[in-house]
Image (cartoon, rainbow, N blue to C red; front, side, top):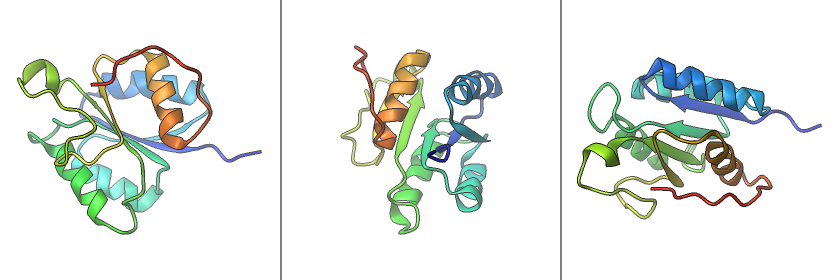
Length: 138
């Protein structure tokens, strides 16, 4: 039997974290959490997650962006898939997407995220089999 995949869920909104943690754990993932960029980097060193779910605006504006850049510059963490889950596109005229060079991540999801879309995006990020769900990533 395969070991559970470990996910790191990073967001400063405790309700968002607990809701999505429950969805992920109910679907067989081991979920660890962090509530800001510093905690995220500490958890990555300590727990070595298989995938990171990362908010952008936390303790400071762009906190998640700087974390993603730091992870990509580090040889030990550069290959960890990163999925951004953000509401930034709702409050900013800039429409972010996975081709943004300044935000080196594998996928973008817009809050609120539908559980089925979250799960399919995580599976895809981990290279696990997925079923096609029609959705739009930001």
